[in-house]
Image (cartoon, rainbow, N blue to C red; front, side, top):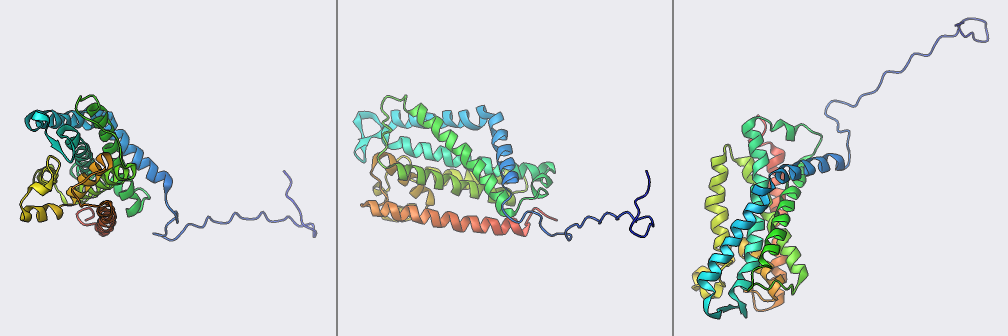
Length: 292
């Protein structure tokens, strides 16, 4: 092919391609939320627990149902009523949200910890996700599992002859259910950052989560307790989650004598979760026990 010539009759020089300009090392390429990466991590976590749904969804639901059967038989005889309803109807909402919270904690505390133990934690830390996006995806997946467990439990309890799950206040049902799941998901995520082996995580479950769940008014109203124990119960965040969730079904609660007390508890849980989320974000951003 003949060379191109300019107006003077001399061959024209071919323009050299300009070198590609790369951003400075460490400069972010994604300046907004990485929705693709966030969704990918979220779906990865959901598919992980859904592949073993017999263990992660159905087994916890069956275990919690056993509590309903045992306590209804043991304490619900003779037409016993609590807050104006039969004992089975009283205890069912507390068991539902307790199952949701425990499974939110279990899901959020597993992935990070298993990554640390198996040496695959780099799969969470290297992708182009900010600390907030990473935390959001993990917490959202844990809440998804909690909601699925709650739906399975509610469906199973509808088959129990003495349980009435009529909804009195849908907003309280949704708010306290989600706030309880988010609260335990954040605690589980924080536990997975701190723990160095599964025994550490099991210790938190057995000595912190389980006692707080069982001593939160799931099977009783705190008015039956001595004043000192009532004060201790009111310092337990689990109490407000369970009582508020029960308020959504029954329209009654032992949080206070008015609906305004329930509203104050709802706002308080939201503030508590916001503060806890900020704390977990700071811990995650510091790289504590994650980066050497």
